[in-house]
Image (cartoon, rainbow, N blue to C red; front, side, top):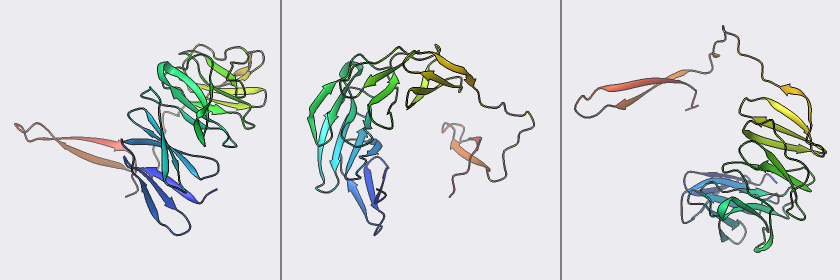
Length: 231
């Protein structure tokens, strides 16, 4: 709802847009990722030790969900009625955000490191099933629906729209799939090649970073990165 902004510097923090006040969420580990509930009243904090913290931002109480994974999944349903979380052994579970002990398991396993996305109406969700394929599941039952999608390359992300799915694989090409048949629609959409005379714009400046070499030499090793840190 735009009333809060969340970020992490190891500890989750919430900034209130109305008055500029900042609150800390003192978790029990290093927080790497934050996800807002669609209502803005709950926040999922993913820790690097694999635990998912569900914070009630009004009462400041939290529930902890051990995911059993070092790369947990925590994705809210579009209307906030479900939260898709990872469990041990690369399993997934759909839980009720207000009652994490309620929910149902998702059929099959996920590919470690894969992300998941719900369709706009929340009836289905999709994500990496193995190294080369994407699966689609029914939210109501947690059962997989339709054939596997993918051309054989590792999928980076997937997006569902109606009866179609768009995947982005490691070759950075976008492929459109018919979810019901698993057939690819048209050729891959590939990013345009970079012209050999391409030059970075002036707004992107090269900054020099220095690091001390081992004490014996006391020489500085330097390298340049083409980025602007806006500081």
